[in-house]
Image (cartoon, rainbow, N blue to C red):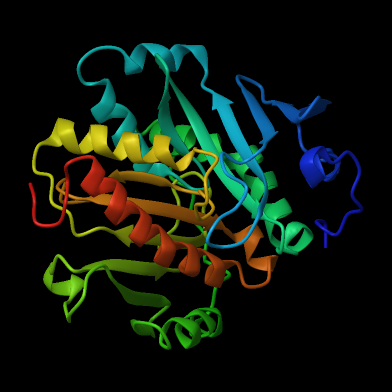
Length: 320
């Protein structure tokens, strides 16, 4: 497999040189600069930076390092994010998120994803490396291209998903041991509890978050793959406030903390009244063993993190 590489330059034990090798066949020009990798796309730059965690000890064991993938957007897009409606625009664009999200960084908007790596993990070659590589290659492209195609400038990409019922059965087999989970017709639905007592996210109960995997929906820019969606039950009926909350969640996801990997983005749900975390795994990632199961486990932990963060932002359960 193309991600079975030997380690080279390793800031904080992270083999950035492996990413150089993976990006070599593409049109992206990548160079190492200190503890960072600089990837030059045609119209913008992506920076992968390896930084120490805010706190090394965590409930999940010692943290080795945090890798952040940060994209500067093409200059013409900056004008789109000026003015009162900028938060609504940025949050709406994250509906096209695949492996990264738009988030506020000071006075500007950037694209970003984050990986927290623990000392006990041994997942660099088989999981972390391909996810970081694809985030560098198509994280921002998915959002920009999806938006461009939605305007009708280009036809949406199509293609059948490589994920099968057997792939989803693997995820169901794990989740069914810890929560309500069903699968069928190239789709999976699970409910993650957020509070004590029974409840149903399908009935919009405030005690559960709804997680879905869908292999029947293609991405307008990336084509076939696997769509992942985590719907939180918090209702925020003011459009601009919901947009700001989604952007704040994406900003929090970039922190160097004990958090599940951030390869996706928060955006307003289709009913425009609740926060939803979306990811899209392009077909090329189907070769990564167990990647769908990992995204499901991360979603289960993300639901708990988001529930706490939404409460801190004044959007607790049952509030609008």
